[in-house]
View (cartoon, helix red, strand yellow):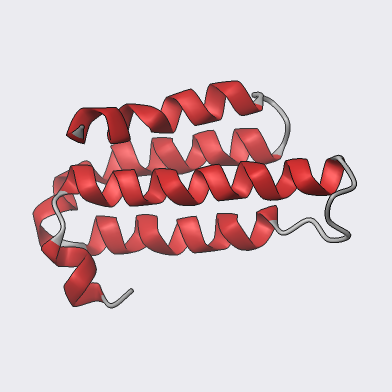
Length: 101
């Protein structure tokens, strides 16, 4: 997604889109763990999420949200390190989608 298009979204829509990628990331790891996929693609989703978080931070209207965005990315790293479970990370990110519903 281009920066211009990303910047045209409000913060809640940006976070909701990131939530969609989080769902895909969790699904990718579970598919690998369950033997439904021969490759664990969760890291590639994490990389995409990282890029979206960076674009969100760089969006001029979101500059004051630096710490919040760092905290959110740290939660993703905790999930990747298996410090928190799927249910936790999905509910954590679901709050943004619920906020715009």
